[in-house]
Image (cartoon, rainbow, N blue to C red; front, side, top):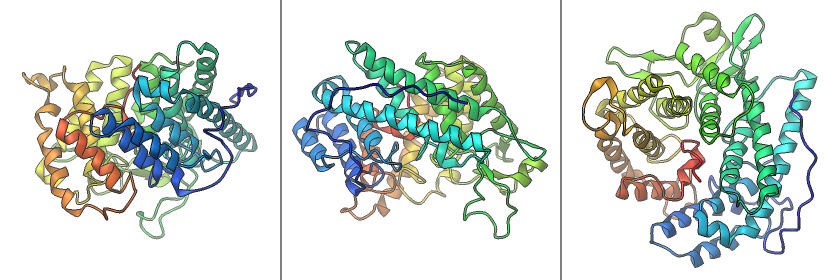
Length: 429
């Protein structure tokens, strides 16, 4: 069982930020004012807006940061913490008081979620994906905790210790999620979820839960966070072994077409795991959320973190394998979640890390950098179906797409690391 610590007393964060419990659209990073704020931060860092405008948008998020059961990486106090942390060193000084208050809430929320996970495990109740995943669960909280731990001022040693302690407890929980489990007599990944397959599965599909392999809701998100933390030297017992265990599961379920396009199924049912046979007929769209690009980026991060050069090149080759007109032309939307936007940002991150590698002995620039033009063209092609200019969505709408266009114009990842909310980036000092 994961132990939790007592909640330390903190000074009041002051009148500029309260942490009571309303539920409001302004608190959403997925489709609310925090999405607008995160984009404005990036525009300011690239010289296209101002910190005064960022401050104005911060007020629009409301005086109350939601710390309810709904709070997570994309909603409430943790989402606001991520956005403010993305302002860079000077911004973190300017909004230090707000961040201090949000850090307190983040630690408390983490303890509450881990307490609930412990209680669930003690009763023998099965795991649900929303408990651990990137979108709503402990992996998402871990992403914010890692960034805040790395960026917390050295002058606040006790404060940094509290953040690091909460991060450590999340990592221990995720290490436990990496261990093999059993459903009846069938060995399954430890992040096996009790939920029945989603609406994309055939009607009448056998029950018994499923395992999600994608970045947004599955094991790839867990792997990416474990890798980022390991590389940042925030490590827990059995950390490296857990990374290896998850990699091993992905090795089992790796698929390849006759055209040498590498892919993984989005999810697996108990029947598929038992038979070791994939029902999915072929590769899906190469999306960030549940496709090969997100999965392979997580595998690349893991290989980099543990110093596995061969594994890194294999992951990069997997990404490069679908950067063809045939594969990318199947993508029709520009959004981050399941469209070309998220695909492009993920490939861009992978390409930056691949620059020093030469897959299969090919001289010159890496294969991923050589093929960056193809995902960029896919973004341009799908931009013709941009959503309503009045929308405020990040994952599915124009704020996320505008972030992609900023990176596309500069051919560089977001300056403030805004794409880190997708779990695809490192936690840099």
